[in-house]
Amino acid sequence: VKHQQMYTPTFIVEVLDATTKEQLCFLDKVDPHSTIGDIKSLFYKSYPQWYPARQALRLDTRGKSLRDDEVLQNLPVGTTATMYFKDLGPQLGWTTVFFAEYIGVLLTYLVFFFRVPYIYSHTYALTSGPHPVVKLACVCHTFHYVKRLMETIFVHRFSHGTMPLRTIVKNCAYYWGFSAWLAYYINHPLYTPPCKSSHFNSRLLICEFLLRNLRTEGFRVRRFPTPTKNPFTWLFFFVSCPNYTYEVGAWLSFTVMTQCLPVAIYTLFGFIQMTIWAKVKHRAYIREFKDYPTVRMAIIPLIL
Image: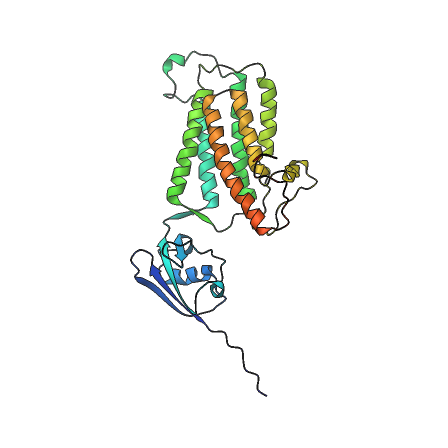
């Protein structure tokens, strides 16, 4: 008896422009186990100006972009698949993104701390030097972002994900602008030192700025993070994103130590944004892991 050989049909992939519906690429005999990333690479051979990171492929013109790791045969399509292409614009890697944000914030703050000419009026030229709290704030701020830069360059491993150039410009404008705003007031020659409790707040700030750099999330891990013997990870008993919790605590301490309104506003905006990110990750953990601890909240233990 002759055994019939198992036959796996190949796919035909047609790529159309999402706006004009014009056919851009026709791929014949595509392996059914090919991923969207593989299809992007094939598309890139025909259009070198659109490298894979610039491409968004969708099954519908207004649908959700397909992930690079999705497999062709698992998609809701027949053996002839029609995909719609959208150009995401110029992209930059995450290392470049974080480096641009951090170096800008760091240098912007230092420009005000050293009172570069033409920033403050010449009428303040004979004022006394920075108050000790101002100096400590600069040390903490500088250490915070130098540590971030070192981690970005030497420690962290990023995926092949990218960010659109226009978004990087917007992010840098936000971070650099806020850095300049709060640095202007903290380092102003007429800055009024905070109350006597600043020494306690200064020590708390240093502790918080050390803790907030705790990296709790592995690279593309398939299991949710759990506490270890390291006491800094014990916050995992209560929240899904302790790194955000520590970050908020650091900026709250910085606000109390400097008693500066722009810092408080920056802390509030940062808390709102980090809460959104934390809740998204928290919901993702709940969906993916059936045994995810119910006692955990997103960012604030037992509350939020």
